[in-house]
Structure formats: C-alpha cells, structure tokens
Picture 1 (cartoon, rainbow, N blue to C red):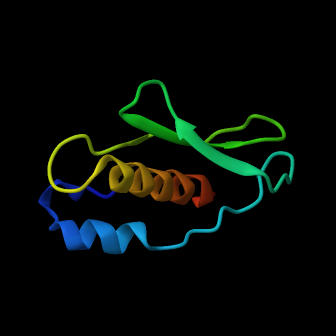
Picture 2: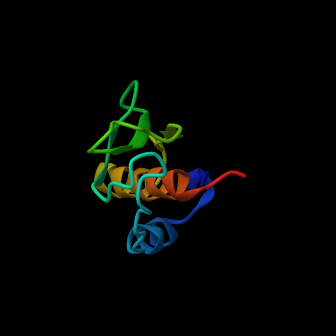
Length: 88
C-alpha cells in the first residue's frame, strides 16, 4: 500500500493520473469490477459487481498534502491493485 503522507502534492497528483485496469473476477470471470468505501470512510475496497467477491480493504489517506479527491482516487487505484493481486 502506498503511503502518501511523505509525498509532495505533485507526487500524489502524478499517482492519481495513473490508469489501472482491473482483472476479471477469479471466481465468476465477471469483468464488472467497482471500487467503493469499505468498512469506514478510511478504507476502500474493489468488488465484483456480478458475484460480490471482494479484495482486501486498503487504507485511504485522510491527513496531509493533497485534496479529498486526490486521496479518493489514490485509494481507488490501490484497491484495484489489491484486486489484481493473485496469490498462488
């Protein structure tokens, strides 16, 4: 997980401008994957829209340089990266 608290605002924006494409669901093969807040506003998660499978939650930055929109987008990217990790 990336920790944006030690980054300059320009580094956070550069990270936000990355494009990460979610892989298909490893359980149902679905390609409709979305991100949303997890158990609280500090956590984000990627989920399959077809079967409901989800990856582990990632922490969203809540303090420091950057804007809420930048922090949300960085968390979305991290959630998709967590979704794309395949173990085994």
